[in-house]
Image (cartoon, rainbow, N blue to C red):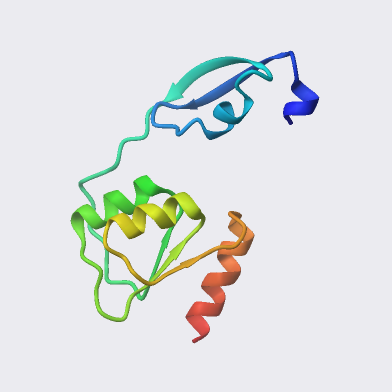
Length: 117
């Protein structure tokens, strides 16, 4: 993308809590126009039944869940990608299955496999 967009102005609509990882890569290659369009805020008022498979698609999801619930014996933890995996490790999860490619399709396939075990 940096090659295609080099020297151009590029708009990045993003969450206030974004890591801005793409923007950091493109510094000096493009003119970055930053636009915060929403704020991620975790819910705190929720109740969930026990689940055997916990699937996390963002670090914020993991933080919100584990702020309220402990990891129970026998639960499996699945992460969509590396940043979510790292957040789970920081929260004390040791055994994490991470999608090799951060996509919903790959995540669904991993979950299907894990539920069949």
